[in-house]
Image 1 (spheres, helix red, strand yellow):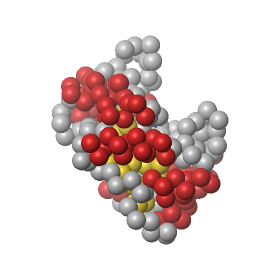
Image 2 (cartoon, helix red, strand yellow):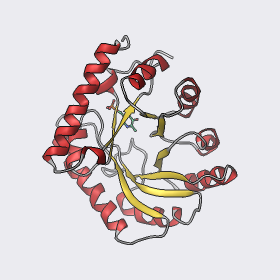
Image 3 (cartoon, protein in one colour):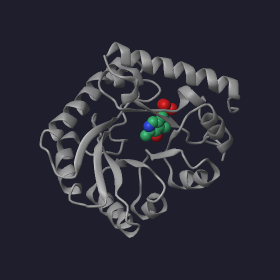
Image 4 (cartoon, protein in one colour):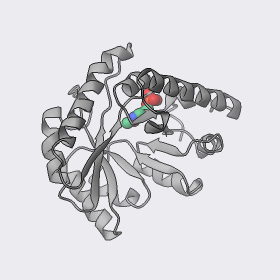
Length: 238
Ligand SMILES: *Cc1c(COP(=O)(O)O)cnc(C)c1O
């Protein structure tokens, strides 16, 4: 599949913006309280540059190699989010450049981030990835194990626990994921009420192309949208 032209990209972005705004309106939320993370994985830097020129400033990638090769090619005021599974031995490659890591799913990974963040004297915001639906194919901790991981990771001074993230199941009707989003939001509130030091449960990263409107209605503060903006991904190119 060819990359979209600037005009195509422009109308897609406008459409997504409108859908986000409408979901906010429907649920009595402010547009500023929901951040659009444009998921740019597999797309070339030219497409990212076009998206930047059309006003997008927040990009999500799921592979360390890909994000580190794109960052130096693009404007410095982009906020980069690592949204995919992270291996401990690759933490050092991204810890300086990403604004947030969405995919912390073990204490061992949290400790690896702590070690590298300490070396560069940075406190890095992270989200705990929760496998709400307990799908075998997905990374993430179980709902029932999340609090314990938050408590342990909160002791690491170079991490700042900023909230929770989930990748909901791939479903045909987005309404099917409403209970998943609701559960994550309830867990967030539950943990917030414990007032754990170094934990600020404010971010809820949930909702993708197929279900971001439902996620917003259920309290998402960050939606990760890829194919609805950039078209289908071609994994053979690279
Ligand atoms: C690819 C990806 C997305 C975006 O998926 P779309 O369905 O294309 O919007 C969101 N989150 C994560 C973690 C991803 O890997």
